[in-house]
Amino acid sequence: MPITYTSGEQVEVYRFSIPVTVGVPLLALFIQDFLPLRFPGFAKYVDLPLLVTIFFAMARRSPIAGLFTGAFIGLAQDMLGHNPIGIYGIAKTVVGYGASSLGVKLDVENAGARFLVTVGFYIVHSAVYFTVARALVNMSQSWSWGQGIVAGLVNAFIGVFMYFVLDRFKQRT
Amino acid sequence: MESVLGRYRNLIILVGVLFLQVLGLAMQVKRNNDALQDTRLIRIWVVGAISPFERGLVWIRNSSGGLWHNYFYLRGVRAENRELKQQIEQMRLEQVRLTEDAAQAHRLQALLAFKEQYVAKTVAAQVIGSSGSDFSRIINIDKGENVGIRKDMAVITAEGIVGKVILVYPSVAQVLLISDQSSGVGALLEKSRLQGVLRGTATGEVGLEKVMSDQQVELGEKVLTSGGDQIFPKGLPVGTVSKVGSGKDLFLNIKITPAANLSRLEEVLVLLEKQERQATAEDNVRVRAADILAQRLPSVPDRPTADAKSVGAVTEAGARPASGGAGVGANTGAQATESATKPSTSGSGSSVRQPDTRKPSAQAAATQTPKVEGALTTSSKPKSPAKTQAAPEKPVTTEQKAPSKVPHPEPPASDNGPN
Image (cartoon, rainbow over all chains, first blue to last red; front, side, top):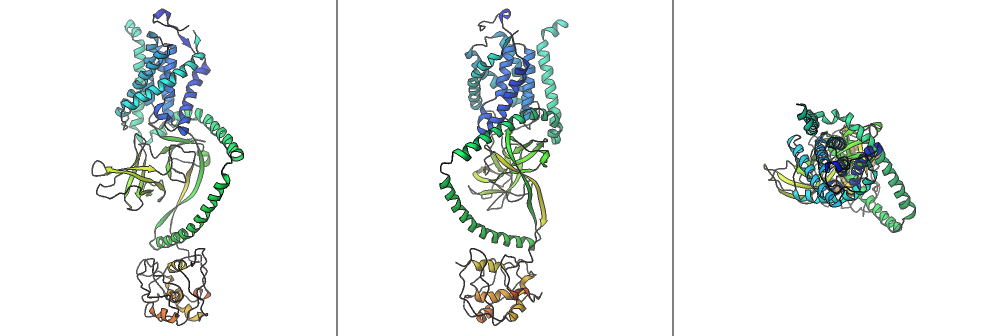
């Protein structure tokens, strides 16, 4: 039964089994790593680890769990690249914290809400990444609202379907 | 105090986690030179967890694809086979010409004591993954330290260069693509020989930097490696110029389309070993540049065998390089003799003018042959016995008498001989 309003007492908190907690982020990282070889534009528009972060953070509804989920997934994503470790880590920590905090207050079982939340957090993630990469690492980055919004919509579209699949792994506390 | 901590517990933990990550980031940035090596142990966990799956998936894809393409989907194979055979024929002809040109260049390099770089050993590797991020253009390959891959080795395909190895694990290596903004490759333009630095951009394009704006660069001009980065050997294809515009600080803004398709890489070659050695001409098989050129021109009718002895006295004279410098194409006494029986071969940089050397009279031709400088050369063409005998070191000059009779030269050995 989906939660449709946001009373603190009635918010449903979910947990996940260890294989799902470890396996789903790893699978997301693997697909994110592998698909760009076949579909060159994939990495430009899709960020599966981010979608997984948002999903787990919203489902757990615990800011601390959310920020650590984001931090671990982000750091793992950093380790696959060659840039300094921590850029994705910081961005996804912020998103994890924000998504779980939002999950406490909003109905996040609804597809429309999930779509908008994902678009919003994609842009937040891009903004934090851009800021950290430029300010701390001195990487040359260019900001494009157009690309950010398009990529946000693409991610949200994929995310809505992905969340629907991942909902099956939820366990009530 | 406790109530404040309890109230803002989440926020405090968030700030703490962010602070730790910023600290870690700052430490990596500060030690920028070896940041990748410093974090190698941490990175290996994730790469080690992901790469077996990637390797497995690539194996499954290749196996199933191979089964389908090799045993079932053979449509159009005969036609393709025919086309390929035609291509082979054309390439064989081209190869003969290029071999001769290469030999000629080789002799020049030897003369000028150039050092040549050779790709001595390579290993083929399969691309199994990428960084999965648009901000880090790297690929993972399925070979690593176990087969001798080391950091900073060049990675190429048959089409052109791909990048360099930046991190090596036992069975996986990470390759930084030339389109990444942190990469840099020494490059030069093929025609104009202008040198620059090839760099990737944040958007994944490749540009040639440090070419002055007063230089002329043509669209479509090929770009090669210059060898200046000490990673890629000189002369490997990089790409073609796709856009030229004015950049900042008196430099041109040149965009390059990479020769290798960087977004669809499947197999690559890692250059395990480069050898640098001084170019040497092959002494045991000598032929003059003039002979090579002569082979491409029509031959003259057979002629009675001449007095080999008289020829031998002058033939090898030109084998020693002239003190005057680059002597490729310059004539020796032997050339003088051959010029009587072979068509005009005054090309290849020779300043000698040979008026109507196709004249049948050997004597006439010999006497007409003017200045003689040293000649260098090599070739697969067998030498006549006369040439292998007496070989006076003294270069033949115009004052020397050319033989009155010359033997008819042997027919050219190469496939593209007189035609």
